[in-house]
Image 1 (cartoon, helix red, strand yellow):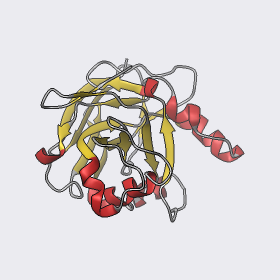
Image 2 (image 1 turned 45 degrees about the horizontal axis):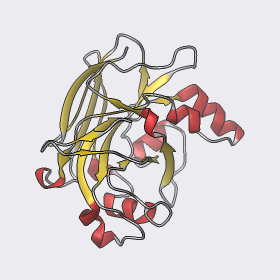
Image 3 (image 1 turned 90 degrees about the horizontal axis):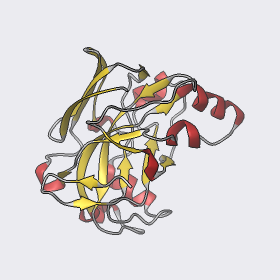
Image 4 (image 1 turned 120 degrees about the vertical axis):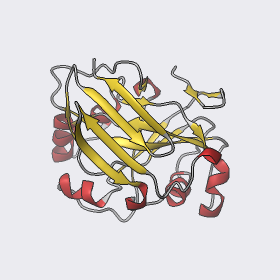
Length: 217
């Protein structure tokens, strides 16, 4: 079981990873998808977690793997049916995550109306940084996200571009899933997703949260 580490030395163990799809308008356009009136939710198992500073293994012979840089949120207190005004009382801190996706497999699943479970939840598909306490981060609705592959800029955006902001997301999710201490929420990715392969060097950053360099194994 991968544990979540914080800048103050605290360690938490998540029970689940709740992910949001299609939360940036430009990403919706590049995927040829349609905007949803409610958050698009899917889950990753805990076995998807991977320490992001350790070389990241990806599946071979399973089609193209895409990178998606995202703001990760760690829950600090049980949240069930919380109001938007109370959401930040239930958040412990923020980190940087990659939502790795088997894009060919996801595309086929969409075409046949099947779940995305394997395409999104395979082993090591959620590399995550250490987390900083929420008090150490400024305006969570104004954080720059950036990802480069081998020195070439792929993704650049800001959390201000999220369709569903953090209070709305957590309040909505908590109507259906009880969020436990240590659980992780991925909040969606800006445009620019693209393929990665073994040997690639990734630099990813979220202003005030994390700036990392890692490699694809």
